[in-house]
Structure formats: C-alpha cells, structure tokens
Image (cartoon, rainbow, N blue to C red; front, side, top):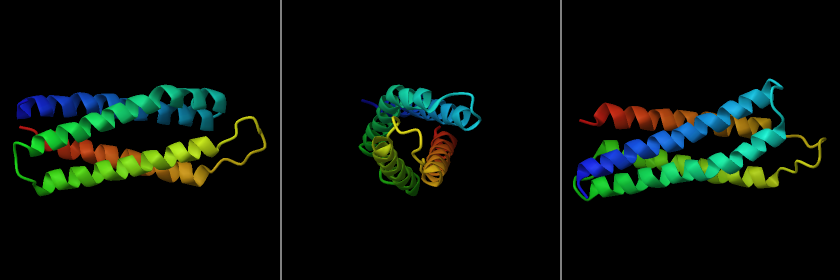
Amino acid sequence: MTPLLFQALIFISCIIGYGAVVTIDTAGLFWLFKKRSMDFVYSMTGITQPLIWLGWSGIVVGLLGTLSFTPLTPLITYQLILLGILGLNGIFLQITKKKLNLTNPNQKLPLFSMFLATFISQTSWITFLLLQFTSTP
C-alpha cells in the first residue's frame, strides 16, 4: 500500500467512527431532553458501537501503515496518544453500559461519568481530526 491509501483509510475511518460517535451522542441529548427513551439510546449503542470500533481500528491501521513510510513524528505521536485515550474511554463506556440495568426504572444513572466520558470522547476526536486534516498535504 502507498501512503496515500493509508491516508484514505484514515479519512474514511474518521467519517465512520466520528459519525457514529455524533449519532449516539445526539441520541443521548434527545434522552436528556426527554424526546427519546433510554431504551432507544441503549438500542442505538448496539448499532453505533461496532461502527465506532471499526473507525477506530481503521485509523490505527492507517497510522501504523503511515509509520512504515515515514519516521515517527510528534504529530503522529500525539495522534497515537489520542487514539489510546479514545480506546480506553470506549472500554470504560462499554463497561458502564454493561452495568446498566434497564429493567430497573429506579436505577440512578452515572450521569457525571457519562458526561465526562462524552467530553473526553468529543475533545479527543475533534483534536485528532484537527491534527489529521491540518497536516494532510
């Protein structure tokens, strides 16, 4: 593969991954404003989680492929760190999702944890995208 194909893989993976993140975060906002049920949001995660991980994996493969053609630069290092943060955040969110018991309507949701995870996710994705697309020739 050429570096251009790895860049294309990163670009397509960003669209898939971040698009799925925005979709589930929007569904969460609808839930907060009482426009959708938690069951709807929970079912949306079943659709978006594989897409998020597919996008994340494609970016990892694309960056590692890029490293086979270019030396490790601070920009790629920052991007790899951001991908690590996104991966850990995604694992945290999957664990949180598994702990939720939707059959118990009196269950208190971990709102602070979910807000913090969403903030970390959005900040990391947007920073990654800015670094990626401002550096691409």
